[in-house]
Length: 126
Length: 131
Image 1 (cartoon, rainbow over the protein chains, first blue to last red):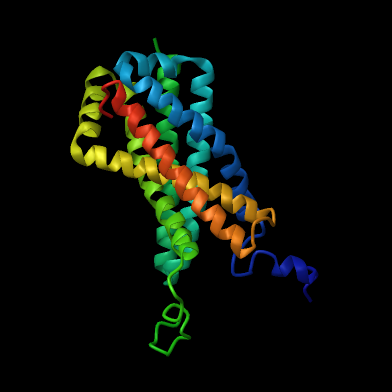
Image 2: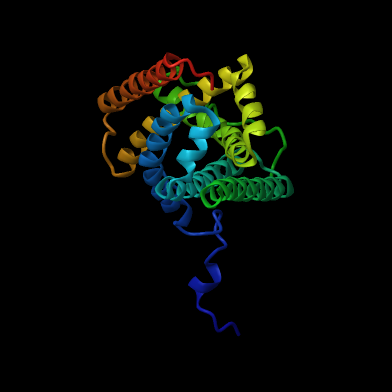
């Protein structure tokens, strides 16, 4: 006899394998990225003419470093959620879908941590 | 998953091409393009962190014609995805579903996205910078 209630047994086994987390996460990260990307685009346009010295001086500012870390983290979270949707829509083989989702997730984590590492290295460096 | 060639319902061929559907497809396409663009973004951060020599290499790479082409493609992709994303957020809030509103917001997205791209291009070249 199974003592678990029907909802507990069904949960996580739907086609999406999860609840509303993906949908809400995508919207919340989108909202956060509106001001972040506008700020980043404006800042890069302002800083890029100063070359290496100015780029480093800019990333050395505490507020800039913190915002860049948030921007990188949010960007890759949002990118992964989007790429996941695209893969789930167009890759149909069970194994190829599993493999491509996992590969994209690994690449996103690798790139996100590399970007954050670079920013922190400049922020904490001389 | 069934990959046998059963007849499918005529879900694509029967539609006249409309701006709303092309904008929806472009939202996805720019999203994928921007995901690839993060490679350049992270490369730029790492090059800046590693020192003036690697920064100069990155600066040179972004300055080549392929680099510039990609930059402006990504710039447009960013502004398009941003503007159309805001349009999507309004839909999520249940607003703007009338056909008239759909077209109005669609054209607005095009105008604002192209406008911001042109402004960014002008600002980038005005002071004589490359990338």
